Length: 120
Image (tube, rainbow, N blue to C red):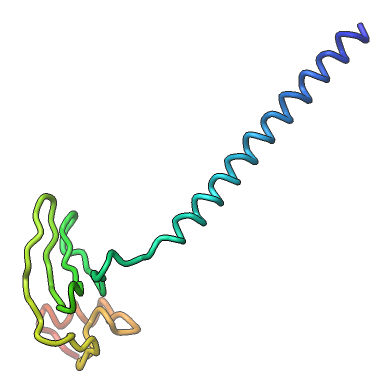
């Protein structure tokens, strides 16, 4: 009886040790992979993405720099179109704040009154 208990305990300890080793190996490999990916340059040669905005579920507009030129491109599944080629780098400062960039959203009640043509 004591012999089977010792065998079961040893077997359980081997299983737990194996599990701990596998989990440790996963963490070590994840750490190594992260380190290797950080060694690669973030830019692909002379190409750089400055900014982008989603305009649909799978469509984006990107501002990229390629070979010293600044381009505005549209990207959709299976298509990439040049929308505009800038002569100089575009100015990214916004002259007039927009509704999306305002720190506090407008009051819904005020917007509804304005839309219905009622003002108090």
